[in-house]
Image 1: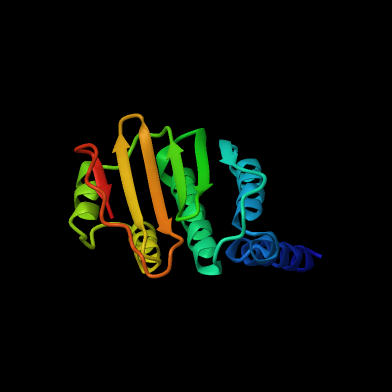
Image 2: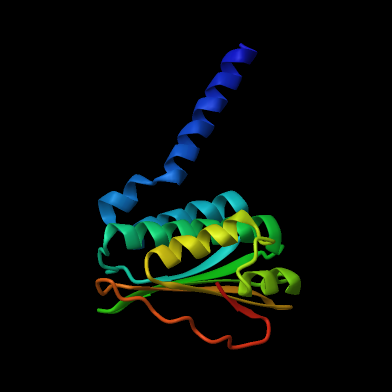
Length: 180
């Protein structure tokens, strides 16, 4: 009976991981609905309170943009849960005719200045998650900016919805900001 219990637990965890890797809602209902569902489940699992600003009528976007936004959202929340020591976060997703944007903010202790410097310089001293987010967004012709201070971290993403148009790198707003 012990082995059967472990097997059932492993199967449940495998289904959960599979769902989190590619939630069916992403293909069926789009990134707005998938993100809201993911945020609700994440909040329940982690105990982190999330204020969500994603319009109910969030439109379908090109599949590659939806997937990029969703993956960055997942990575940001994973980082908040693992590193930020924040009990709350804010997620805002918006769109216009020309671009989609995502902002994720926590209220943790921030990112060490040397890691931000490495991000700014394109160094390899940063974690796989941050560099992966950077590359995923760049591949879509977008920008990803990380701002950090003693009051938390904000990740800002913008992806063009126009064919083959990329946004130029945004200038750093603060000395503790890194455009990656």
